[in-house]
Image (tube, rainbow, N blue to C red):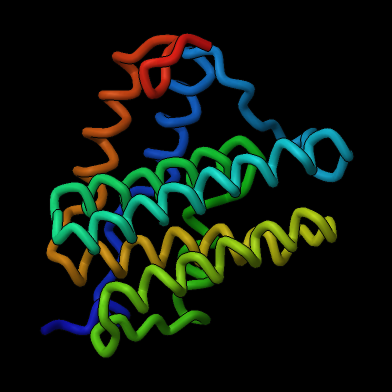
Length: 185
C-alpha cells in the first residue's frame, strides 16, 4: 500500500472551501467571517460548528461499523467540507497552511487502521474546540489544517478521491436550498 503521508495532497481545499461557504451562505446558513474570531458569541458558534465536524466523524465511525465504504467516503467528504468552509469564512489561507502543516504532521496512515485514523480525527477536532475556547488562533489554524490533512489521508487509504466526493456533496447541498436533513430552517 502506498504511504499516504508521502503522496502530495491534490485536494483543492481552498477552492472547495470557498464553494461550500458560498452554498452555505446562499442557503441561509450563518457563515463565519474573519470578524467572528475572538468575540464571545462567535466562540459559541464556532464550538457548535466544530461539534458538527465531530458528528460527521461519528457518522464515518458508523459507516465503518456497517462496512459501508460508500457512506464512509461521503462522511469524510462532509468532514472536509465543514472544516474547509469554516477555515475559508475565517479568512485562513488554506493552501499555505495545508502545505505548512503537512510537513509538520507526518501522518502515518499506511501503518494504521481506519478506526485509528478516525480516532485521530476526533482528537484533532477536540484540539480545534479547545483552541476556540482559549482564543488561540495559531492552534485553531493548526487544528483545522490537521482535520483536512487527516481527512485526505483517510481518503487516500480507502482509495477515495476526496476532491470528487467533496464536489459531489457540495452540489447536493446547493440543490437543497434552505433545508438540511429534511428540516426547513
